[in-house]
Image 1: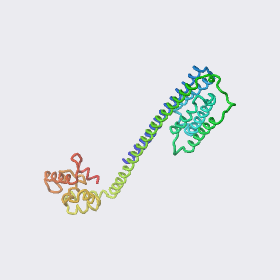
Image 2: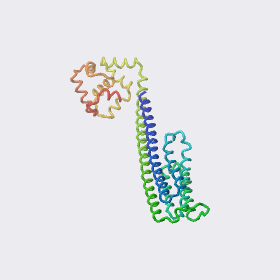
Image 3: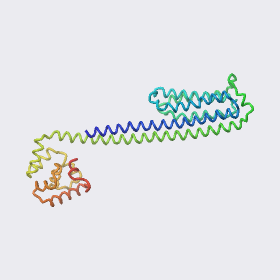
Image 4: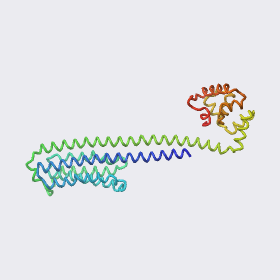
Amino acid sequence: MIYKFFFKVINDEAENMDDDFESNYLHLINRYLLLLFFIFLFYSIFIIAFFGDMLISIFLTIITFFWLFLMAIKGKTKRFRRVLKPFIVGIFVLLTFIVSFFNIYTYKNAGVEYFYFCLLFAVPFFLKYKKDAYTIFFITFIISINFIACLYFDFDFLPKSRYIEKADFKTIKLLNILFSVASFLMDIVFITQKDALIHGLISDKKEKDSTIKDLVKTNAELMKHQMLINHLSEENIQEILNLAESNSPMFFEKFQVFFPHFIPEILRINPNLIHSELYFCALMKLDFDTKKIAQCTNNSIRAVESKKYRIRKKLNISSEININSFLIKI
């Protein structure tokens, strides 16, 4: 039936809507990973250029291309959906320990600790507060513990940079503060874009739900009408047509037996319709054209057209709408 086709169309649109959201969100994640790529690339170049620390620079370069690797496997996210969240948590924990290491490695004087806050601000981009509450608490706990531990403990057993001892810490700290602020602003931009995608998805879902509700209502009306049609046998239909064509006084009574809701619905639109106008409405409900109505009622075509015009006005039917089609739907 038609309503089943509409439901199929709506469900297909819903699936396409979800696919579009996932595709757009993946593109957004890729842009975020690209940002991380450039940040780590800058630091690896900065360290080798200004401090000559080859080992640390190689370490950062490896991580730099790790972000490109994540971008390359974007199409595999559906296959590995179950391990995606633990993978994200693992990356946050890894980045937290990297920040802690560099904070200690630079004698806690280079402003590396500001990047803890960048990690915190990045959490809402990848996770949802309601759905992933415990995961967010875990990541926040790990970042907080690292921040407090690096603040109060010296960790003398960890290596310190021999290249940075005589460096200008004010310049390095300024650069780290500027980059952490830039990263924070980029987090805000990406979170805003993610929220815009989610709000768009919610809006589309509400529109889809509203359409489904309308279809359910229409379907109920169609089923009611279908039950009525099924109730009428071919003999019943032929009987009422014969009564109408012969202008029998029994026609109108029989019509109301077969279509009990039609006249009340017409009167609900306009209770001022007179008997002759209701009679004409019954004939048009049977899809009689002007010429046939004129024959059945012993009226001229012009008189029938005049009567149909008055009915159209009383029922407030637009001139663009076929009056028979309008009445058949009631």
